[in-house]
Image (cartoon, rainbow, N blue to C red):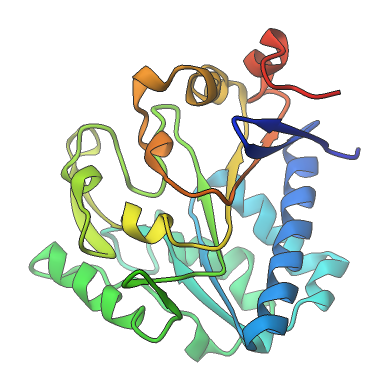
Length: 256
């Protein structure tokens, strides 16, 4: 099924029938971003996301004809956030990406940049990862990725930018450690200064549990969800009809 492309609040929204169609549309966009970046400066700098929705995207990138259309030897992979767990832990974003994508494509291992975990001080892990970003193109003093993949939780968080946490006010560091009380755990995450400089952001949202929040993101600014605080004109949303149900019902910003 071809995705329905609409404009909401000047952000591009692609509504697909289901998770598979959403992932197919997003994979095509990743391929386009890779092609354009490699043509422009000889490399493609991408940051991946964890979670169940990106898993489907990874599988399509690894197994569909699109895999053959990306110059993987010019791809440099980073991660938007990570849990404070060993890299072989079932909850590790790196492990998920390795199992679903990175072990299945011909990308040089040295071009996969993993977030350190297990430091005595969590900000030390974040600082060590920030050092790995120094070699990227820079914009306004921050690393400038070609593409960052994000998801959105049912509380409006993205990456590890959770409501009511200190990282939301970080305006100097590119990477920060944050303790998330409701999860009773530490995370390491990109900050808004990085997200605001990236050339393209794809936000993947699937499932009915996200419908109310997604509606609020576009129509209820007073909620101040973390994802609403991204100030980037190059945000593209890839959502399925379950997640977009309230938007479709209200017919707010939906084009024909």
